[in-house]
Length: 416
Image (cartoon, rainbow, N blue to C red; front, side):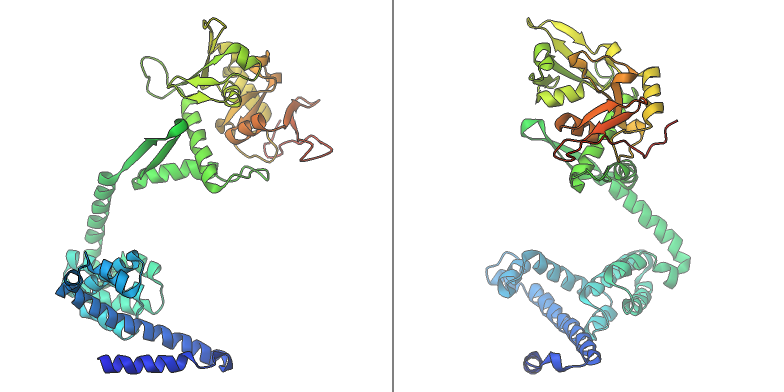
Protein backbone atom coordinates (compact mmCIF):
# COMPACT_ATOMS: atom_id res chain seq x y z
CA UNK A 1 0.00 0.00 0.00
CA UNK A 2 2.84 2.38 0.78
CA UNK A 3 4.31 1.96 -2.70
CA UNK A 4 0.96 2.59 -4.39
CA UNK A 5 0.37 5.74 -2.32
CA UNK A 6 3.87 6.95 -3.21
CA UNK A 7 3.07 6.48 -6.91
CA UNK A 8 -0.19 8.36 -6.47
CA UNK A 9 1.65 11.14 -4.69
CA UNK A 10 4.12 11.42 -7.57
CA UNK A 11 1.30 11.52 -10.12
CA UNK A 12 -0.50 14.26 -8.19
CA UNK A 13 2.73 16.26 -8.01
CA UNK A 14 3.01 16.08 -11.79
CA UNK A 15 -0.56 17.28 -12.17
CA UNK A 16 0.05 20.16 -9.76
CA UNK A 17 2.67 21.58 -12.11
CA UNK A 18 0.45 21.29 -15.21
CA UNK A 19 -0.73 24.60 -16.77
CA UNK A 20 -4.48 24.50 -16.12
CA UNK A 21 -4.90 27.74 -18.06
CA UNK A 22 -4.23 25.78 -21.25
CA UNK A 23 -7.17 23.41 -20.69
CA UNK A 24 -10.56 23.81 -22.30
CA UNK A 25 -13.60 24.40 -20.12
CA UNK A 26 -14.72 20.81 -20.72
CA UNK A 27 -11.33 19.49 -19.58
CA UNK A 28 -11.29 21.79 -16.54
CA UNK A 29 -14.62 20.38 -15.40
CA UNK A 30 -13.28 16.87 -15.94
CA UNK A 31 -10.26 17.74 -13.77
CA UNK A 32 -12.56 19.04 -11.04
CA UNK A 33 -14.63 15.85 -11.07
CA UNK A 34 -11.55 13.61 -11.10
CA UNK A 35 -9.81 15.41 -8.22
CA UNK A 36 -13.00 15.30 -6.14
CA UNK A 37 -13.41 11.56 -6.77
CA UNK A 38 -9.75 10.95 -5.92
CA UNK A 39 -10.10 13.03 -2.76
CA UNK A 40 -12.98 10.84 -1.55
CA UNK A 41 -11.15 7.62 -2.36
CA UNK A 42 -8.10 8.81 -0.43
CA UNK A 43 -10.39 9.78 2.46
CA UNK A 44 -11.62 6.19 2.62
CA UNK A 45 -8.03 4.97 2.96
CA UNK A 46 -7.25 7.63 5.57
CA UNK A 47 -10.32 6.76 7.67
CA UNK A 48 -9.44 3.06 7.59
CA UNK A 49 -5.96 3.92 8.88
CA UNK A 50 -7.37 6.18 11.60
CA UNK A 51 -9.78 3.48 12.76
CA UNK A 52 -7.00 0.90 12.96
CA UNK A 53 -4.67 3.28 14.83
CA UNK A 54 -7.48 4.12 17.23
CA UNK A 55 -8.20 0.44 17.83
CA UNK A 56 -4.54 -0.31 18.50
CA UNK A 57 -4.27 2.51 21.06
CA UNK A 58 -1.38 4.11 19.18
CA UNK A 59 -2.21 7.61 20.43
CA UNK A 60 -2.19 6.56 24.08
CA UNK A 61 1.03 4.61 23.60
CA UNK A 62 2.68 7.75 22.22
CA UNK A 63 1.59 9.83 25.20
CA UNK A 64 -1.50 11.57 23.78
CA UNK A 65 -4.73 11.70 25.75
CA UNK A 66 -6.84 10.59 22.77
CA UNK A 67 -6.63 9.75 19.09
CA UNK A 68 -8.19 13.10 18.22
CA UNK A 69 -5.53 15.01 20.18
CA UNK A 70 -2.81 12.91 18.56
CA UNK A 71 -4.23 13.60 15.07
CA UNK A 72 -4.36 17.31 15.81
CA UNK A 73 -0.63 17.30 16.47
CA UNK A 74 0.31 14.76 13.80
CA UNK A 75 -1.70 16.28 10.94
CA UNK A 76 -1.81 19.86 12.29
CA UNK A 77 -5.60 19.85 12.34
CA UNK A 78 -8.11 21.82 14.32
CA UNK A 79 -9.14 19.58 17.21
CA UNK A 80 -12.81 19.65 16.14
CA UNK A 81 -11.80 18.42 12.66
CA UNK A 82 -9.71 15.67 14.25
CA UNK A 83 -12.66 14.55 16.40
CA UNK A 84 -14.92 14.44 13.34
CA UNK A 85 -12.43 12.18 11.55
CA UNK A 86 -12.22 9.79 14.52
CA UNK A 87 -16.03 9.76 14.86
CA UNK A 88 -16.59 9.14 11.15
CA UNK A 89 -13.98 6.39 11.11
CA UNK A 90 -15.80 4.68 13.98
CA UNK A 91 -19.25 5.02 12.39
CA UNK A 92 -18.02 3.69 9.03
CA UNK A 93 -16.40 0.76 10.79
CA UNK A 94 -19.78 -0.50 12.03
CA UNK A 95 -21.80 0.67 9.01
CA UNK A 96 -22.77 -1.71 6.19
CA UNK A 97 -19.81 -2.44 3.95
CA UNK A 98 -21.61 -0.76 1.05
CA UNK A 99 -21.01 2.63 2.68
CA UNK A 100 -17.24 2.13 2.80
CA UNK A 101 -17.26 0.75 -0.74
CA UNK A 102 -19.19 3.79 -2.01
CA UNK A 103 -16.68 6.16 -0.40
CA UNK A 104 -13.71 4.14 -1.67
CA UNK A 105 -15.08 4.21 -5.21
CA UNK A 106 -15.63 7.96 -5.09
CA UNK A 107 -19.40 7.53 -5.52
CA UNK A 108 -20.13 9.50 -2.37
CA UNK A 109 -18.37 12.33 -0.56
CA UNK A 110 -17.10 12.32 3.00
CA UNK A 111 -20.10 14.16 4.47
CA UNK A 112 -22.51 12.11 2.38
CA UNK A 113 -20.91 8.95 3.79
CA UNK A 114 -21.45 10.31 7.30
CA UNK A 115 -25.15 10.90 6.58
CA UNK A 116 -25.61 7.45 5.05
CA UNK A 117 -23.83 5.76 7.97
CA UNK A 118 -25.96 7.65 10.53
CA UNK A 119 -29.17 6.82 8.67
CA UNK A 120 -28.18 3.16 8.34
CA UNK A 121 -27.59 2.96 12.11
CA UNK A 122 -31.03 4.43 12.80
CA UNK A 123 -32.76 2.10 10.33
CA UNK A 124 -30.90 -0.93 11.64
CA UNK A 125 -32.04 -0.19 15.19
CA UNK A 126 -35.69 0.14 14.20
CA UNK A 127 -36.08 -2.25 11.26
CA UNK A 128 -33.10 -4.60 11.21
CA UNK A 129 -29.87 -5.10 9.29
CA UNK A 130 -31.48 -6.31 6.06
CA UNK A 131 -33.63 -3.19 5.73
CA UNK A 132 -30.61 -1.03 6.60
CA UNK A 133 -28.67 -2.59 3.71
CA UNK A 134 -31.51 -1.71 1.34
CA UNK A 135 -31.56 1.84 2.69
CA UNK A 136 -27.84 2.23 2.03
CA UNK A 137 -28.31 1.20 -1.61
CA UNK A 138 -31.02 3.79 -2.14
CA UNK A 139 -29.08 6.54 -0.34
CA UNK A 140 -25.91 5.86 -2.34
CA UNK A 141 -27.94 6.29 -5.54
CA UNK A 142 -29.44 9.52 -4.21
CA UNK A 143 -25.98 10.80 -3.27
CA UNK A 144 -25.34 11.29 -6.99
CA UNK A 145 -28.06 13.98 -7.00
CA UNK A 146 -28.32 15.48 -3.53
CA UNK A 147 -25.97 17.29 -1.13
CA UNK A 148 -25.50 16.02 2.46
CA UNK A 149 -28.15 18.30 4.02
CA UNK A 150 -30.87 17.23 1.60
CA UNK A 151 -29.70 13.63 1.75
CA UNK A 152 -30.12 13.68 5.54
CA UNK A 153 -33.60 15.13 5.18
CA UNK A 154 -34.59 12.47 2.65
CA UNK A 155 -33.12 9.82 4.93
CA UNK A 156 -35.67 10.59 7.63
CA UNK A 157 -38.31 8.98 5.37
CA UNK A 158 -36.14 6.27 3.81
CA UNK A 159 -38.41 3.54 5.18
CA UNK A 160 -41.16 4.79 2.87
CA UNK A 161 -39.00 3.47 0.03
CA UNK A 162 -37.41 0.33 1.45
CA UNK A 163 -39.96 -0.89 4.05
CA UNK A 164 -43.25 0.98 3.67
CA UNK A 165 -45.05 -1.43 6.00
CA UNK A 166 -42.73 -0.33 8.83
CA UNK A 167 -42.47 3.35 7.93
CA UNK A 168 -45.44 4.74 9.87
CA UNK A 169 -44.61 2.88 13.08
CA UNK A 170 -40.94 3.83 12.86
CA UNK A 171 -41.77 7.47 12.14
CA UNK A 172 -44.15 7.56 15.11
CA UNK A 173 -41.51 6.02 17.36
CA UNK A 174 -38.87 8.47 16.16
CA UNK A 175 -41.24 11.39 16.69
CA UNK A 176 -42.10 10.20 20.20
CA UNK A 177 -38.42 9.79 21.02
CA UNK A 178 -37.63 13.28 19.74
CA UNK A 179 -40.51 14.75 21.75
CA UNK A 180 -39.24 13.00 24.86
CA UNK A 181 -35.73 14.36 24.27
CA UNK A 182 -37.10 17.86 23.72
CA UNK A 183 -39.13 17.71 26.93
CA UNK A 184 -36.13 16.44 28.87
CA UNK A 185 -33.67 18.99 27.44
CA UNK A 186 -35.88 22.10 27.55
CA UNK A 187 -34.51 24.89 29.75
CA UNK A 188 -33.87 28.60 29.92
CA UNK A 189 -30.99 30.00 31.95
CA UNK A 190 -31.05 33.60 33.15
CA UNK A 191 -27.65 34.83 34.35
CA UNK A 192 -27.25 38.21 36.02
CA UNK A 193 -24.51 40.48 34.74
CA UNK A 194 -23.23 43.86 35.87
CA UNK A 195 -25.51 46.86 35.54
CA UNK A 196 -28.71 44.85 35.86
CA UNK A 197 -28.28 43.16 32.50
CA UNK A 198 -29.26 39.53 31.98
CA UNK A 199 -27.81 36.89 29.72
CA UNK A 200 -30.35 34.45 28.29
CA UNK A 201 -29.47 30.99 27.02
CA UNK A 202 -31.32 27.74 26.68
CA UNK A 203 -33.02 25.18 24.49
CA UNK A 204 -36.71 25.39 23.57
CA UNK A 205 -38.90 22.47 22.56
CA UNK A 206 -40.48 22.59 19.11
CA UNK A 207 -43.81 24.00 20.28
CA UNK A 208 -42.26 26.79 22.35
CA UNK A 209 -39.79 27.56 19.56
CA UNK A 210 -42.70 27.97 17.14
CA UNK A 211 -44.50 30.26 19.59
CA UNK A 212 -41.38 32.39 20.06
CA UNK A 213 -40.75 32.66 16.33
CA UNK A 214 -44.40 33.53 15.72
CA UNK A 215 -44.20 36.59 17.97
CA UNK A 216 -40.55 37.62 17.63
CA UNK A 217 -40.00 37.23 13.88
CA UNK A 218 -42.60 39.80 12.72
CA UNK A 219 -41.53 42.21 15.47
CA UNK A 220 -37.84 41.94 14.64
CA UNK A 221 -38.09 43.11 11.04
CA UNK A 222 -36.68 46.61 10.40
CA UNK A 223 -39.30 49.17 11.41
CA UNK A 224 -38.46 51.63 8.66
CA UNK A 225 -35.64 53.32 6.73
CA UNK A 226 -34.37 54.95 9.93
CA UNK A 227 -33.92 51.62 11.71
CA UNK A 228 -30.17 51.09 12.12
CA UNK A 229 -30.40 48.23 14.64
CA UNK A 230 -28.64 44.97 13.86
CA UNK A 231 -30.66 41.74 13.77
CA UNK A 232 -29.68 40.82 17.33
CA UNK A 233 -30.76 44.21 18.65
CA UNK A 234 -34.08 43.94 16.83
CA UNK A 235 -34.73 40.53 18.38
CA UNK A 236 -33.87 41.96 21.80
CA UNK A 237 -36.33 44.81 21.34
CA UNK A 238 -38.97 42.41 20.03
CA UNK A 239 -38.69 40.37 23.23
CA UNK A 240 -39.12 43.59 25.22
CA UNK A 241 -42.25 44.40 23.19
CA UNK A 242 -43.69 40.97 23.98
CA UNK A 243 -43.07 41.54 27.70
CA UNK A 244 -44.75 44.94 27.55
CA UNK A 245 -47.76 43.45 25.81
CA UNK A 246 -48.00 40.74 28.47
CA UNK A 247 -47.94 43.38 31.21
CA UNK A 248 -50.70 45.34 29.51
CA UNK A 249 -53.03 42.35 29.33
CA UNK A 250 -53.48 42.28 33.14
CA UNK A 251 -53.73 38.49 32.85
CA UNK A 252 -50.41 37.58 34.44
CA UNK A 253 -50.43 35.86 37.85
CA UNK A 254 -50.40 38.23 40.81
CA UNK A 255 -47.26 38.67 42.88
CA UNK A 256 -47.87 39.42 46.53
CA UNK A 257 -51.47 40.36 45.83
CA UNK A 258 -50.59 42.93 43.16
CA UNK A 259 -50.75 42.61 39.38
CA UNK A 260 -47.42 42.04 37.62
CA UNK A 261 -45.90 45.46 37.14
CA UNK A 262 -42.69 47.47 37.09
CA UNK A 263 -42.23 50.11 39.79
CA UNK A 264 -39.77 52.97 39.33
CA UNK A 265 -38.91 55.21 42.28
CA UNK A 266 -37.77 58.71 41.34
CA UNK A 267 -37.35 62.10 42.97
CA UNK A 268 -40.00 64.47 41.55
CA UNK A 269 -37.79 67.55 41.33
CA UNK A 270 -35.13 65.61 39.48
CA UNK A 271 -37.71 64.12 37.12
CA UNK A 272 -39.21 67.54 36.38
CA UNK A 273 -35.75 68.98 35.65
CA UNK A 274 -34.93 65.94 33.46
CA UNK A 275 -31.97 65.20 35.70
CA UNK A 276 -33.21 62.64 38.18
CA UNK A 277 -32.26 58.98 37.88
CA UNK A 278 -34.64 56.27 39.02
CA UNK A 279 -34.52 53.02 40.91
CA UNK A 280 -36.45 49.87 40.01
CA UNK A 281 -38.17 47.95 42.77
CA UNK A 282 -35.44 45.30 42.37
CA UNK A 283 -32.78 47.89 43.25
CA UNK A 284 -31.34 48.68 39.82
CA UNK A 285 -30.57 52.26 38.79
CA UNK A 286 -31.96 53.83 35.60
CA UNK A 287 -30.90 56.90 33.65
CA UNK A 288 -33.12 60.02 33.65
CA UNK A 289 -34.00 59.48 29.96
CA UNK A 290 -35.09 55.92 30.67
CA UNK A 291 -37.23 57.01 33.61
CA UNK A 292 -39.02 59.67 31.55
CA UNK A 293 -39.70 57.18 28.77
CA UNK A 294 -41.02 54.56 31.17
CA UNK A 295 -43.33 57.13 32.71
CA UNK A 296 -45.32 57.13 29.44
CA UNK A 297 -46.11 53.42 29.69
CA UNK A 298 -49.28 52.23 31.41
CA UNK A 299 -47.46 49.06 32.48
CA UNK A 300 -44.98 51.12 34.55
CA UNK A 301 -45.97 52.58 37.93
CA UNK A 302 -43.85 55.59 38.93
CA UNK A 303 -43.44 56.01 42.69
CA UNK A 304 -42.67 59.73 42.89
CA UNK A 305 -41.02 61.01 46.07
CA UNK A 306 -40.99 64.59 47.37
CA UNK A 307 -38.03 66.38 48.90
CA UNK A 308 -38.49 64.71 52.29
CA UNK A 309 -38.86 61.30 50.71
CA UNK A 310 -42.63 61.16 51.16
CA UNK A 311 -44.60 59.34 48.45
CA UNK A 312 -46.31 61.96 46.27
CA UNK A 313 -47.74 59.61 43.65
CA UNK A 314 -47.82 55.90 42.87
CA UNK A 315 -49.23 55.44 39.40
CA UNK A 316 -51.90 58.11 39.16
CA UNK A 317 -54.72 56.56 37.16
CA UNK A 318 -55.45 59.91 35.53
CA UNK A 319 -51.97 59.77 33.97
CA UNK A 320 -52.52 56.49 32.16
CA UNK A 321 -53.85 56.38 28.63
CA UNK A 322 -56.37 53.58 29.00
CA UNK A 323 -59.98 52.65 28.37
CA UNK A 324 -61.94 54.90 26.03
CA UNK A 325 -59.01 57.30 25.70
CA UNK A 326 -56.70 54.58 24.39
CA UNK A 327 -59.43 53.32 22.05
CA UNK A 328 -59.76 56.82 20.63
CA UNK A 329 -55.98 57.01 20.24
CA UNK A 330 -55.95 53.68 18.39
CA UNK A 331 -58.73 54.85 16.08
CA UNK A 332 -56.81 58.04 15.30
CA UNK A 333 -53.28 56.65 14.86
CA UNK A 334 -53.98 53.07 13.77
CA UNK A 335 -50.62 51.90 15.11
CA UNK A 336 -47.17 53.39 15.63
CA UNK A 337 -47.43 56.90 14.23
CA UNK A 338 -43.74 57.35 13.46
CA UNK A 339 -43.15 57.75 9.70
CA UNK A 340 -42.48 54.46 7.93
CA UNK A 341 -43.43 52.17 10.85
CA UNK A 342 -46.08 49.46 10.40
CA UNK A 343 -46.31 48.23 14.02
CA UNK A 344 -49.94 47.59 15.07
CA UNK A 345 -51.57 49.20 18.14
CA UNK A 346 -51.08 46.23 20.44
CA UNK A 347 -47.31 46.69 20.24
CA UNK A 348 -47.50 50.40 21.03
CA UNK A 349 -47.44 52.54 24.16
CA UNK A 350 -49.02 55.97 24.52
CA UNK A 351 -46.38 58.70 24.53
CA UNK A 352 -47.15 62.08 26.14
CA UNK A 353 -46.26 64.76 23.58
CA UNK A 354 -45.76 67.19 26.42
CA UNK A 355 -44.25 65.00 29.10
CA UNK A 356 -46.32 64.02 32.11
CA UNK A 357 -43.51 65.23 34.42
CA UNK A 358 -43.63 68.64 32.73
CA UNK A 359 -47.33 69.05 33.47
CA UNK A 360 -48.55 67.54 30.22
CA UNK A 361 -52.19 66.43 30.44
CA UNK A 362 -53.42 62.94 29.71
CA UNK A 363 -55.61 63.69 26.72
CA UNK A 364 -56.04 62.73 23.10
CA UNK A 365 -54.43 66.01 22.04
CA UNK A 366 -51.31 65.26 24.07
CA UNK A 367 -50.77 61.59 23.18
CA UNK A 368 -49.42 59.57 20.28
CA UNK A 369 -48.98 55.84 19.76
CA UNK A 370 -45.34 54.71 19.42
CA UNK A 371 -43.81 51.25 19.22
CA UNK A 372 -40.99 50.39 21.61
CA UNK A 373 -38.23 51.24 19.13
CA UNK A 374 -39.63 54.61 18.13
CA UNK A 375 -40.61 55.44 21.70
CA UNK A 376 -36.93 55.15 22.60
CA UNK A 377 -35.99 56.99 19.43
CA UNK A 378 -38.18 60.00 20.30
CA UNK A 379 -36.83 60.19 23.84
CA UNK A 380 -33.17 59.92 22.82
CA UNK A 381 -33.01 62.05 19.67
CA UNK A 382 -34.03 65.53 18.55
CA UNK A 383 -37.12 64.44 16.64
CA UNK A 384 -40.17 66.51 17.59
CA UNK A 385 -43.71 65.14 17.56
CA UNK A 386 -46.76 67.37 17.33
CA UNK A 387 -50.33 67.31 16.08
CA UNK A 388 -51.01 68.87 12.71
CA UNK A 389 -53.90 71.19 11.86
CA UNK A 390 -56.08 68.15 11.15
CA UNK A 391 -55.37 66.65 14.59
CA UNK A 392 -53.10 63.84 13.35
CA UNK A 393 -49.49 63.31 14.48
CA UNK A 394 -46.60 64.61 12.47
CA UNK A 395 -42.90 64.35 13.17
CA UNK A 396 -40.29 67.04 12.58
CA UNK A 397 -36.83 65.58 11.91
CA UNK A 398 -33.63 67.05 13.36
CA UNK A 399 -31.89 69.69 11.24
CA UNK A 400 -28.94 67.31 10.87
CA UNK A 401 -31.24 64.89 9.06
CA UNK A 402 -33.30 67.42 7.12
CA UNK A 403 -32.10 71.06 7.04
CA UNK A 404 -35.60 72.15 5.98
CA UNK A 405 -37.16 70.16 8.85
CA UNK A 406 -40.25 69.32 6.83
CA UNK A 407 -42.85 67.47 8.94
CA UNK A 408 -43.32 63.79 8.12
CA UNK A 409 -46.28 61.48 8.65
CA UNK A 410 -46.98 57.77 8.77
CA UNK A 411 -48.86 56.54 5.69
CA UNK A 412 -48.99 52.83 6.61
CA UNK A 413 -52.10 53.01 8.78
CA UNK A 414 -55.43 53.87 7.20
CA UNK A 415 -57.15 56.53 9.22
CA UNK A 416 -60.78 57.55 8.99
